[in-house]
Length: 246
Image (cartoon, rainbow, N blue to C red; front, side, top):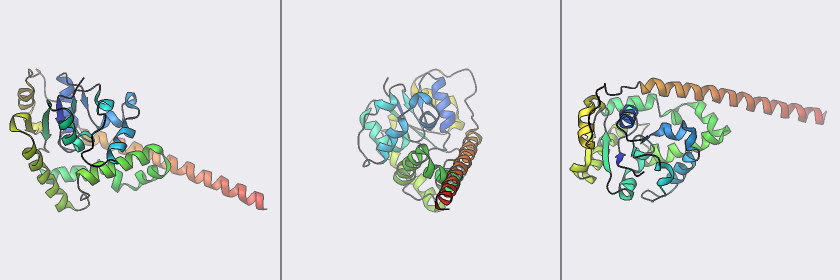
């Protein structure tokens, strides 16, 4: 397979519903969930860490992660949309926008996927698990650092970055190859852009905020377990040392 559609829109711009829609239209789609939840994609997180730790604009063997996909939306693919467009020059670009604008996008992001930076329990996972430090490193450098310019802790700057990013994509992609899209527009614009028939069913409306929050809760539970094990291990070590010195 080869990428036919490159999603440039930030996470939290309806990308989960778009992901479901593209799969329904017969375009196997890549999304952050394919990195962290698809067991068949073991090694993808290592790949994206390598991307995150390479200079912007670097080319990689993209087929390592996109071999079974014809579309990508959401992080981490949106962070390298320029590189992907150079690697797949015949692909079209989809720029998803939050239906309620930049301010709503910011609130949604801070409330969900920014947990890698603002939830202390994730920091525990970073200290104690390979997944934690790999995912934290990739997210911090590629998503929050490179793509969002490290401004997420400043609401006004983050909103400005969101708006300037839209203009960057519009300026870089020829109009006939670009669809600026909100999921509230439904099947019509997306299917017309892709040249496919509209399904006779409602457009996917996934409650991805609740899904993500459930994932975060599971991660937090895992962090408590890991912290408990670490404390227990330290206690055992201290007890053994005390016994040895007694």
